[in-house]
Length: 255
Ligand code: NAD
Image (tube, rainbow, N blue to C red; front, side, top):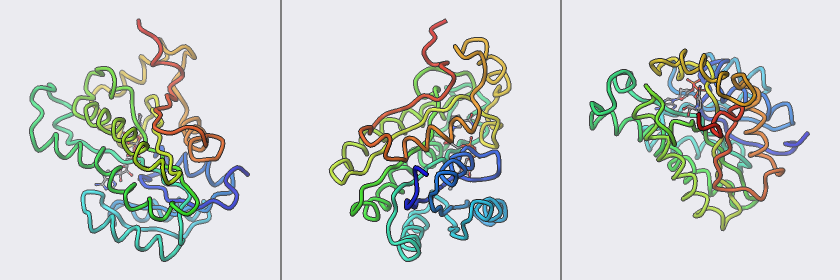
């Protein structure tokens, strides 16, 4: 029961395939009390059902493109929970157009949207979560992908947004460390989720990974859930500003 007596907020559950769902399951298994966000009424029912299965009735609507939603979210969390021990940020989006065409055709607006939702939102939620963590310290985890570091065909503007996200992890870690708040990223290998299906050629990435990865397979979503659990638990208390690869070793291989 690694997370006994700990409580936190999970942002980014869309359905049962979501990486955030796997992280929530790992946290629940270890005794954490959970609250969830959902993005609009379209996803409310899914998240309500998942939260219920994990013993939670704490649900908040939040579209991270809206500052007022983020502010209200943390006001409500403060009322309901008082403080937070951890925060999961598993949110990303880019326009489909920008994931299909050549990277050089990325529009100014497409670049803005991808960065706003996939990178800036980590800063927005961390800023509001920090005062709820300061008394006891806390741990924040976001999700990244290898496309932040190397060119992955079709990942395009999302790769650039993930590079910004990973740099934001380091700057947030440096800023919030004085309050004993840690900020880390888990860089997951490819997993068949709603967001992943928006990446053109995603099936090819899934098929090719086992050929190169040292473990000769794709990562399981539960393995990402357990790695995030480690980053959110006191087992990782000496780690901040890191990007932890959970990809069956894919990122270490050159050819
Ligand atoms: P998912 O579709 O299940 O989750 C994406 C979430 O982002 C959804 O819950 C969606 O509601 C949320 N979201 C998008 N725009 C939002 C907005 N404006 N406001 C609030 N929420 C918004 O897919 P997933 O693969 O579980 O993605 C979770 C994270 O994991 C993302 O950051 C993704 O880039 C990252 N990741 C995914 C993979 C993969 O292969 N699936 C690999 C590495 C990293």
